[in-house]
Image (cartoon, rainbow, N blue to C red):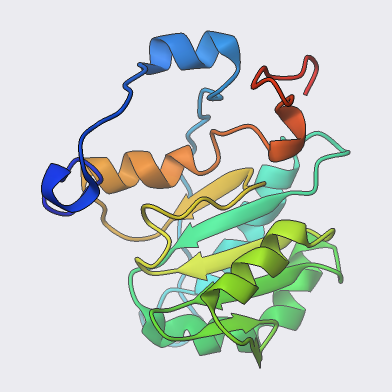
Length: 193
C-alpha cells in the first residue's frame, strides 16, 4: 500500500504537514462523507453490468442531496477502461435517466481524454474543461485520477472497482473538499457554503 500511495517518501518527498480529519472537518476544510451502497444491474442479455444505467442512477441520486445552486459533478472509478466507449454511446440514455440533457460525460485514460464522445487534446485540457464546465458532469477513470491530481468541484464519487484503503480514501476525498469558490483568499472557508 505504501508503494502505491502518496505516503511513498522516496517518490513524493517528506511530509510537510499532517492535519487529522478531526481538525479538518469542524473547520470545514473536509466535509464528512455520506456513504451509500447501490445494487449494480446487469444488461438484459448475459451477466454484463449495465454501467451506464448505474452511473446515471447514482448521479441522479447524488443530485437529490446536493444544494440546488451547486453544479453537481461526479467522479467514477471503473474497474477497466474497456467499457468507456460503450458507456459513452449510452450518453443519450444517461441524460434521459438523469433528466438533464446538458449533462456532460468525460473519460480519462493514460493516453486519451474524451468529452461526450469527442477526443480532446490531452488530460490537462479535459480537466480544465471539466473544472470550468457550468453543466452537471461525470468524469470516468480507471486509475488515472486516483492520486495526485486535484479536480475542483466534485460533489460525489462512485466506486465500481476494488480499491485499497489508501486509494479508497483518496477517491472519496475528491468529493470531501470545498470548492475553490468557497475558500476565501486568506484560506478560511466561507460560511453557508
